[in-house]
Amino acid sequence: MAQFNKTNFVGISTIALASSIAVHSYITDSTTNVLIEQSGTVLSVPEKQIDQVISTGDINSAIAMPVVAKIAQDAEKTITISKNETLLTALTNLGFDRKHATHAINELKKVYNPRAIKQGQTITVQFITADDVHPARLKAMNFKTSGGNSIELTYENEQFLAKKFELKLVKSLRKVEGTINSSFYSAALKRGVPASIVKEAISALSYDINWQHDPKSGDEFKVLFEVFEDENGNVIRTGELKYAAFAPQGTWKRIYAFKTNGGTGFYNDRGESVVKSLLATPIDPTRMRITSKFGRRNHPILGYSKMHTGVDFGAPTGTPVSSAGDGVVVKACWNGAYGNYVEVRHNNQYSTAYAHLSKISVKPGQKIRQRQNIGSVGTTGRSTGPHLHYEVISHGKKINPLSVKQLPAVRLNKKELNLFQDVKLKCDKEFTTATPALVVAKKPEVISIG
Image 1 (spheres, rainbow, N blue to C red):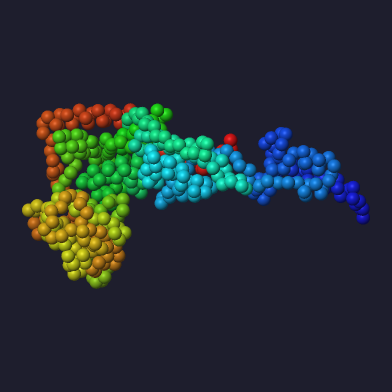
Image 2: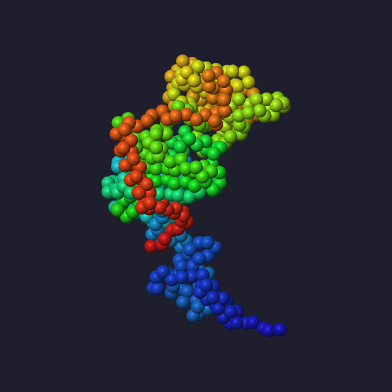
């Protein structure tokens, strides 16, 4: 059996130590320290002492080597404010103590209200990382607001200084075109259309399209909207919807923004206002689905075939319900199997009814406008779950709400129609030359070492 003396043991140990250092270290200053990563912690070891250990084989000196954990370093990070997150929370998550972060925010308030920072806002932060003695320290912070300003906060000589600069914004157009898979809303968002623009397009088209009934997978759509960019081409805020088109089952429905003395509205390609006497759906189409149509069906509670006199829209309890048109509230009360119930008379021909509400927000005799909130979705009365039972009544007879077709409420005069045709032609040309809206993949957050 081989014999090992003290010299052999020291030699082997020295080789092992040198190999470990070679694998786990990198040099930041050739004349001072070596940084060694050990169990997830960065340690600083004087380079001369490591040379001494390797040359002499003095293991005791290796054990006695001084180390300092967590070396402060310059860093830069772009953070994105998440849902229900505040700027204070975001800064403390970076390692700043609460007092330091609060001091920064108090200075920021002199030029900008931190409460205006919303979900999705990106902020670039330059700071010194924490070490064993000090928490992280802010060096600078900057972001751009939707109002067209650039906000900068710096920390020098133990003081914060906030500044606001007005950005020079340029208006340009963005377009999106594609086909839907599950819904127009999700398809448009994925292709870069801002949520506010998608909802406006859905609202304007909802007079002619029932978003829970008409769209099918593969239907085409087009959207043209304004954006405002800074001098570097970064989109700072969204402007107005200019044009939207959707082709349920191949039949195109188009709307164009057009300004008259009465304000800006949306008109179809014949110059007719999209505003009709009644909405096709009295709930936000992105928050509901049709669960039962008009006609005979096997009643889910009574268990026998019975005429279903309206359309049921399934939606979460509390979802706002809007009036389908201008009118006067006839009933707003408990109505037996209907539960909480509202009926609105719109004209000499049409009335609409809304049942199973969790909340009623109007009173009998009250005049209301189209899209005005009248209550909330619920499951009161004879109901198996939260939904809105919606009825359309024509000359006292309940008819299929999905079959109601009506003329536009507003028509352009001859002069306005000529102007509209010019706007329409210009918009069609602009769509062909507009820049496609790009979907930028979210980058992982990376700390760069200065």
